[in-house]
Length: 399
Image 1 (tube, rainbow, N blue to C red):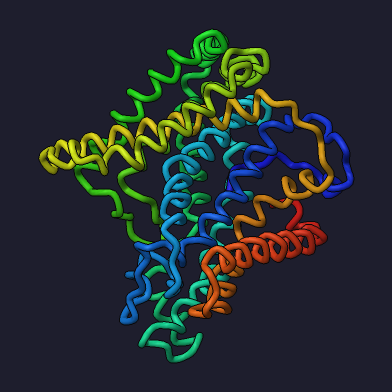
Image 2 (cartoon, rainbow, N blue to C red):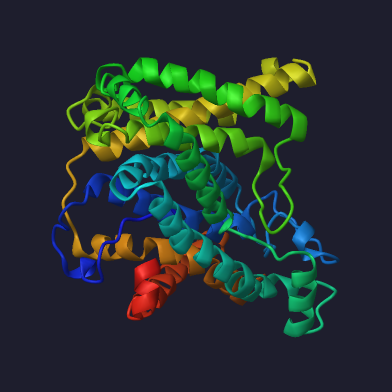
């Protein structure tokens, strides 16, 4: 999950946490909940399949016989943009942290807060989660046999792939920024002009995102991942690094003085940006299905789809940023508690998702009801688990 500045154990009881930007806090908490929802519905998409001979060749760890086509539409909406936006938000806080603590201390802190949780998730949490899937395979001979097989293949990162990738980006950008410290403030001055030019910024990001995404997509395809345990979707490596770097630059002057200025055009015109987000995604979903597009060659059809995908990605990122910067947000104790627990919830939620999906597997219940049950139960159980874990001082320092 995104790197959180320490909030303190009493955030849940604080009506208005000092020094915090609620719009950014609540946005990344919303994205965390979207991750939980995303994983909760994967078992019920029409394209999900399960390989009983090797469950890790499946495209979803648990696949139900009950499906709902609407989940294809909803799941794809999330998939197009929410990890890019997570990387952007994470990048916002890199330069202020480096400036405050120095490069070495910054990297040491990121190792403590990212690498250690990732290692714990890799060897403890993910095996517990994926055993729910392995039990459905033809090779199930108990948990110890499963764990040995898993260790032999280098474990499976699962959702915490984001954490190791974020650690890599943090370290790489800190090392790159170190010899460029004299020039970074000049880049910050450029960022202060963005509040007046959100449309131009959008167009530039669209071009850059297309340049980052399309070559790797063409070379490796949509679904290829790197090997375990350092897994990442290959076609999106450059795209995610672009959004992270963009967040870093926006955060140089103080992000409230740049693109995300509360009185800037992006924030003031948030209804238009949300409308653009909706229109762009529906164009991605429906335009490739038009008969005139189907008459194109496979290469031309793929280019149309890929460009619409990038358009939807950038439009959704800008739309959500505009929404959360533009609307008036009031501090809520329960939302503050979720914000405090969001990182931990990201780490542990997959255990609850997969075992709850197993619990209702193939039962004659509409998939929408199954999804709601899995999502709500996962959210509450993950929330309670992290609340309990935060009572441990050393865990509280990391999370």
